[in-house]
Image 1: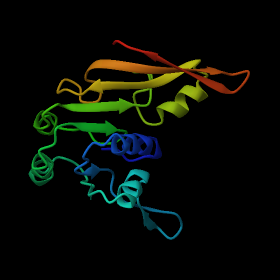
Image 2 (image 1 turned 135 degrees about the vertical axis):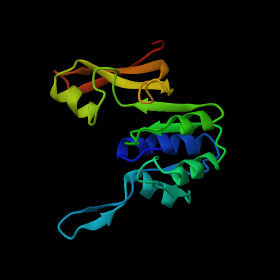
Image 3 (image 1 turned 90 degrees about the vertical axis):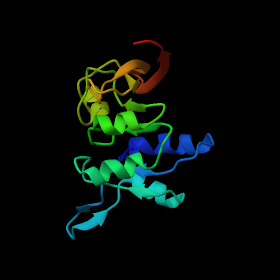
Image 4 (image 1 turned 45 degrees about the vertical axis):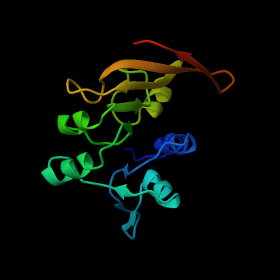
Length: 166
């Protein structure tokens, strides 16, 4: 489950690791540009390129959208910048749970464009968080692990590190 360019390398990694991806969920195509031609999200485009089923419900408020997801009988769901809050029915329908990959060191930049905000704010360090989603706050969840990056402003280079633990 994801939509922007940030999500594409993660989808590629899941495919390359040999996992069976049964469906890709993303935001629906939206009209863009002067001609208001519908444009697919980067994840939607990539999923079609590699022959995956793509679904893009507007939300999960309808019983049909929830039951369609539950019927997949997925072992795990990976969520990366998807843009929808998942209801408890979705979270509990996945055998091994839902993992959320968020493009910031939570809770600093929780909303949209966390990478941009970290750079604009002059943060010396940023990264991603991976966490198990739960019903208390489906965006944050529990058991978070973080991968950090520090930005060397003088050389315009990123240094990547790994930190394990909440």
